[in-house]
Length: 156
Image 1 (cartoon, rainbow, N blue to C red):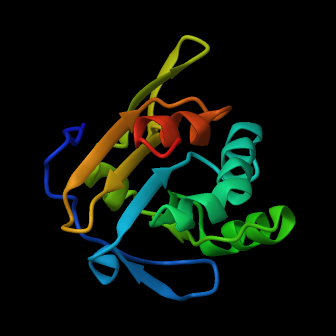
Image 2 (tube, helix red, strand yellow; image 1 turned 180 degrees about the vertical axis):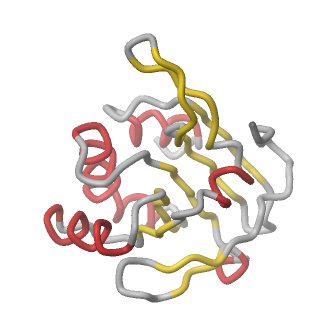
């Protein structure tokens, strides 16, 4: 299991494609605050709740100087359907081999109904303009996450 990130750590750089094939890299957003959030699976109840929460708050996050990138191990075609069905207005990136999730400590052992397995851990990392971790949250709750994130970032 990968080491979780802490405030002050260098955020691992990555380049991934969104549902349309456009590449997005963390280093390409240097100079801006970035929220990188990891969600387990497109179009599932919790992930839909969380994505729609970001969608509904994207303007306030952007006006506070934050870009938002969502990452999951889903293939691009599944992400495309999710973006379209929920009218999502920020990039969702495909991390099919979960290498980026692993580098951020967002991939590891999970328990569900008494069974243990490896999978994506719902996590959110805020990265400052210099590429350093400003906030690292693991095992976040989908419901009400953006409001808590805004409070934790001092945006409210």
